[in-house]
Length: 441
Image (cartoon, rainbow, N blue to C red; front, side, top):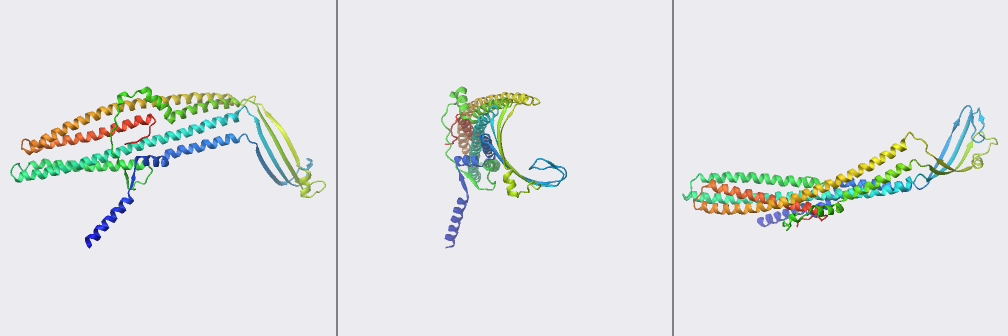
């Protein structure tokens, strides 16, 4: 009964641990990162800010309306607000007013501001899309780094098991008198090195998980584990990749390039806005007002004074700029300079994209060759290890020669694992520039 209860307790603990542990796929990691990345959030706030600017630009077409209330007490020589006569008496006064105004024409600055703000909104949205793409690529890189580290850890654990089995076999041969006692020392040293390799591999796994948690904006203490899909290196021919095709695709798929085009259009409208500052401004105004004075001639009541002093006005105002300390001229020159600067920035972005695409293609080609070489090296090292094991079992070589062959095989396996994931990542980078969804399997 005690054994059964103990077993049930252990099973329940295992279930609780599995439930507490979260398992994340690459798609889930990317989605979470896009929703919680601080860079992405900043870009989204930029969208909101540009939308508010667009709203304000549209609202500038509407009239403005304001109301005012004033009241006070005047001393000495003052003007009676109801008669406009000078008085040498203390006067209590009170007044009300409502004023409205609207811009009829201002050199098309309102229309151009609305158009410019629309381009700014589109640019902000594209910036957010670029930030989202960048975090997705970073997460994919971190995800692959974890898979690489975990596979290296598994390889190290397998190697130490083989070494321990070989040490046990050697001890039997030593007891049988077939091998000298010192032969076991090489295997003891080999096991110590492999124990160190396990510690280093396990530490690398933890470091890569910490990096992924930082990208996901998660608490470092959360027990996060990723889904480990079957990693299959896709059949690809990087030699067939062409810079022109991939670059042209990237130009249309990478949002930062489209954002640059929107900024060029916005800068062009900025020039029109600066030019419009030199045009006359025609505005219309209207208002209502009334007031009360304690020295009214007829000593009317407060309400009667307000009613009798009620007035209205309407007017047109034409403001013609003649000279403004060169502000308009300097503003136009600065707007033109900004257009030139934006065009240069856009060209720089395109040049950087071409460089990145070219490097991605070169890296994919080199990684494929490296992967193929690592495969050949692992096959040769494995054949040498099998031969060394047979010869060692027959007593034809000593333990040092056998452990050397074992170390060579281990290093070849590690290199093969690294080359596989490097090649896979380089292919994903090319896919990224081709606008494809980042997937592992």
